Amino acid sequence: MTKPHALVTGGASGIGRAITRRLAADGFHVVVVDLNEPLAAEAVAEVAAAGGSAESRILDITDEAGVEALIGALPPLAALVNNAGIFKDQPFAAASAADFRRTYEVNVVAPFLLARAAVARMGEGGRIVNIASRAYLGAKNQIDYVASKGAVVSFTRALAMEVIGRGIAVNAVAPGLIDTPILRALTPERLKAQLALQPTGAAGRPEDIAHAVSFLASPATCFITGQVLFVDGGKSLGGSAV
Ligand code: NAI
Image (cartoon, rainbow, N blue to C red; front, side, top):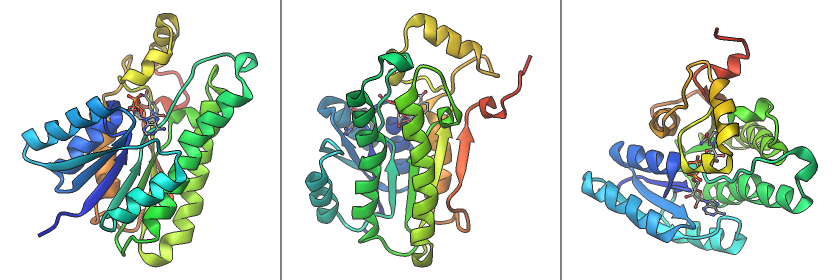
């Protein structure tokens, strides 16, 4: 029997790699969509070595025609995980309009393109999980990123309402600080400062996010839609843990 297909953007690295492993272990055939060819191949090989099934497609997800062609050539997706995202750490005054636009293209417009193409063919029980960030509540030095992740949350809520009548659920996961290559965008001093703000005193693991995505991507998880699940070691609580 053909396995249900799950597409994971940015599935080659960090959180996306852990989501790929987890969804493959859950029984999905995972389509890893990424820019990084060697890492995507590694992700697919890792899944195969663990007895799962995956394939990779190299694509810039901001390429509208490329996204349409890719999704049109796949069987209808059981799950779409909009995980790929970019992040720059810089003071507000240094942020350019070009940075802002590129961050929106990757973090907001691309998930829209993927969701539109996927929903057109998705059946009842389909699942969309968008990776937002705890930072959408507010963070310094990341104005374009924070604004883009706020848009991801609003997009999740609006799309959930659009597709609820078709039995498709759309939710977001808002990770706190997670130990992945994206943190290279922070200077060692900024990383230290971020870690000091963690109530647990440490960053989370990509597997912590994959676990939440597995839950929200499962056809068994009914009656939850338009929600944001914080997976952030308590940081969104806002208080001091000391
Ligand atoms: P990462 O940098 O390790 O992985 C991102 C992946 O996305 C890379 O493989 C990259 O090649 C791919 N990608 C980037 N732009 C792309 C494009 N235009 N087309 C196709 N693929 C593209 O990052 P990480 O940490 O795994 O982040 C995954 C998601 O989690 C992002 O949306 C990020 O904003 C979010 N997040 C991460 C947090 C963290 O602390 N690591 C915290 C909160 C949210």
